Amino acid sequence: MINHVVLFKLKSYPEDEKKQVLTQLKEALEGLKDKIEQVKYLEVGLNYELDSKSYDICLISHFENVEDLDIYRVHPDHMKVVKLVGETTESRAAVDFEF
Image (cartoon, rainbow, N blue to C red; front, side, top):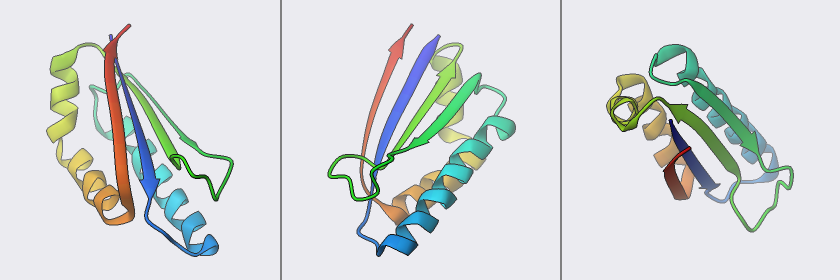
């Protein structure tokens, strides 16, 4: 199994708008579970500290193998979310590992 962990840091937003953007991203990421059959597990967590100096969102997803992760990476539904992420975040960090 492959564990795909991604952290996102949002661009600077006023507090109310940041909450909306976080909700929008969380829902978009969580929606991938039902759209991409290669996703075996998917969880999205929001940092409880809204004004955190670290990352704002964490995505954890599992895949049977690297080939399934590669299918996910280029899947059209994933690419739509990638576009949204690009529009709303300033940085991203990812780690993929076998478990």
